[in-house]
Length: 361
Image 1 (cartoon, helix red, strand yellow):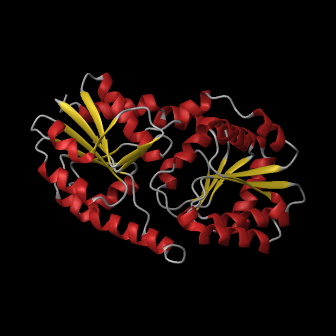
Image 2 (tube, rainbow, N blue to C red):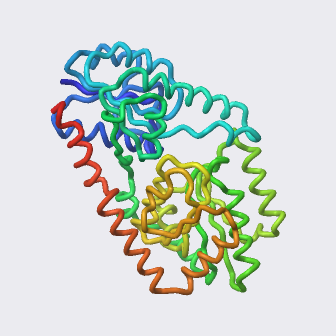
Image 3 (tube, rainbow, N blue to C red):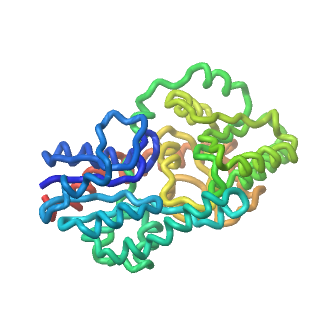
């Protein structure tokens, strides 16, 4: 048996890339010769091969192919049609295109094309369908995938590496100046709800007489310049410029420092297929207030405060309650650490992944 990991673009710090690389490492450890096939890669030490060469390596009846599906990729569908072994797809979700309608025609088209392939992927009759969450998996099943062959497997991640990393001491010192730190981690994209987040933070600043800071930590995409400018405009409309800190493309040390120095991780995202930053916050001990959309309630469980409503005053009041109620804060932090250990640690995920592979192994 040989195994192939098929992924369009492989990058080390991307959530999909981290999941794919972890699967490859586990297959290596199981004694299965494994290669990663992609169109391009960056920042990874593992050797990769062109996707077009996959069939020559692992296209036979005893081979395993795992396709990481997070965007449209016709070449992958062609390759998977010709594979004769066990085919698994790991669906990481594709953002509905309407989120990009006002900001980027290119992103809207890419998401439309990616979601059009849901039915094609389902129609291929994979031997196993995996979703980062039940929310993701139900999209595949609704498109025609077999429910009996479908399983939830949360994505492998780099959280433990962040936990064990050295924090940026200078950043911690800068952030521990008496202000209440509201943290958001995630790429700057329209589905992430930054405009709602600014409204909630503004409500807190207006309602509570204490210094506060909003930390926006995530990669700014030049192709979404219109959205970034909309966030800046909303910040200016509320007169919050001096209260907002942007950290674009943070290092691991900065990321850990931001979590450790923050009083609340506030997530107002409108669409998530899983949300790894929630797991990071659980593991690093940052209490969570979130909008209960898409897969967020499933990932969060009982480890934070989540509301269906997007009322900014409600979220601001929830943060204030966390700041003033030590027992509530301590309880949620313990729930978060326990949820990370029992549901999302890489050791737990590895056991689930290997168990799913048992029929093959």
